[in-house]
Image (cartoon, rainbow over all chains, first blue to last red):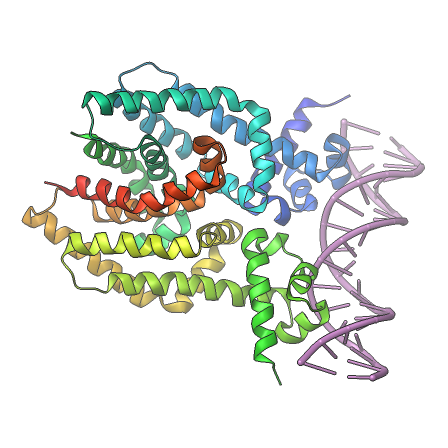
Length: 205
Length: 205
DNA sequence: GTCTATACACTGATAGAC
DNA sequence: GTCTATCAGTGTATAGAC
């Protein structure tokens, strides 16, 4: 009925196109060309462009969040947990540098759909983990182990520091590195330690 | 020849649509409807969709950078300059919350065009200001007034901390605030001081 | 300057042969 | 499962009347 190999080839091609051009900008013809097949076969496997897109988006989005959840699940000491989170998070992004922009772009196009997908993928477990992390932060603040900072501000700062270089890559590369890719890669590589340092300084009592 | 009033109405409508839906997702019909005119008139004023889009994008992009340039031009002491920058930058974004996502989305679609536009808008003056700021950072590091940090890492961290809440708004609102807009507005309002605190802590020798 | 009507191109989707 | 050919819908753009 379905050739898993062909299906995978289509998904790989679709992912590349959708991630760069987004749902609206992507063309079925482009995807077919990249996959080395014709349009009709795309529809044979996925019926509509929207279904194909949703498959890609759900994969990426689900992957994105499940990895984060795993990261948060460790029951380490807070500072160690944060350090490990930053390191692992940056590693994931280095392997999927277009993912953040893809998700943000799609959010821009249709925020509601993203919220719905998030809920269908497993909002509860993620919420639970975030609440847990927030509680941990508040406890440490209470104990005086770390300086006062609002837990939501801290979490968004960590993620923002990690993601921004990927979200704004072309701009930063142009503004700071005169378009030099090698220098930008070096910057990305160094980023882990910098983010860790900034966050730890911010928490030092 | 051209009714400046009608032109402005069209631009306002086009901006709203393009900023949310992007170049590919926007429809001329939608823009015409929002402007209260018909499609033909859009073409009378701007000939093509692409020209209309470029007008909007260049305005937004140019505005975005010229404001930043002005901010950087003050010859204050570094720490004061950074504090003032964060404050003014956040104020600009609070007034144009969709701007960062609009620019990132367009970058994703066509990075080269963005680079070209950047160069045509006035890359030299911006580069000059960035180099100046980098020099200032390096000098202060040298003098020991601030702790060592790579100047490019510092600059991107400041901007990232400011912009991320706007870039990822729907996600953050959902993940951290259960979709509560009022809470999110409060978070944004507090953000200035948090970013300032984080950066100043990172620079404390 | 502004409208209605329409031309023209493109793209998603399907029919049907192999 | 895979292809070629084709349809139907949509969207940009223009022609021409007022």
